[in-house]
Length: 340
Image (cartoon, rainbow, N blue to C red; front, side, top):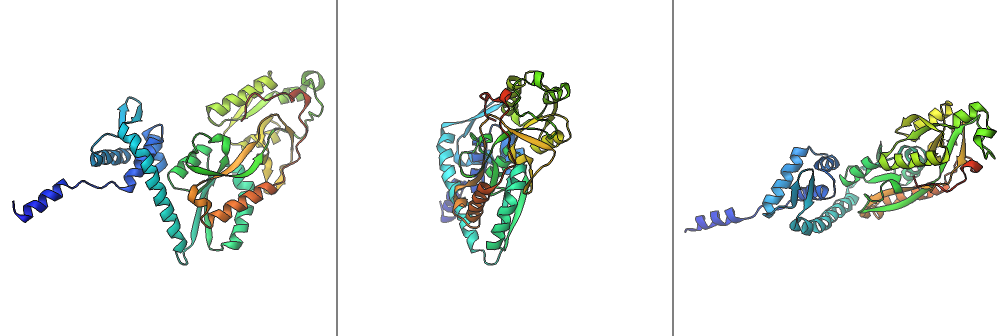
């Protein structure tokens, strides 16, 4: 065989290289329930995702997943690769983010997403203070449900997520949780309704007010949350009926202000800007406070301007003055069945 033939033979035997993009696809699939969810995290079409996984398996020369009807589980090779892929991807994120510090004169865009109440009440003041230190920073802000915030973090479409820690406890692995604020749950009622000292609503309230407290307006977030809310109402107000179901606390509170019923909500959702909403009263309930956190990849805790933003969010969150919350009415002063 001549030299040319040997070069052709060596080239044909050279294995294709594993790409960082393929590792990101593999990691997303390994940490998702379905291919559809993984594709959404990465912002890819599902056929493209499947194609990238197939190319990676061809490059490696073995299957990374057992494919069965409705599920995919890691093979031995997949289990070996998943932890090593995490190290590579973390290193790449740190490299990319570290290099961004040397982008002379370029504007830094802080991409974040979060739940409505935090974006309205805490974030504006934090951004105002950050702009005094980093005047060239700008912000891309999205209001999103907790599950969507996590998907965007995993897909690297945002840098910071602002949400309640208990809504993502199991899915937040791999991110640093920076405490921002504690947000107590309250019973929101129309301003005209007084529950002070009430022990037996049926006997002590007027027929109109008794009917009002038994019209529940419920915020629905996932099956578990809906079940917990339903349990609370069934235990505390067994005669209630659901008059409305909402996908935002703010809408639920708006319905209460209009006299349509009562609702359970975090206290922050009753604040507009720096002031409490009028037309409502808040009563304390026996439920665990909602812990508001900023979720960030670990390297962002040290990287500017994100580090300063996180510190500012913590301070602003700790200084928030919540609306006046009245004492728990005696008829509700029992242990809560579950945390929301």
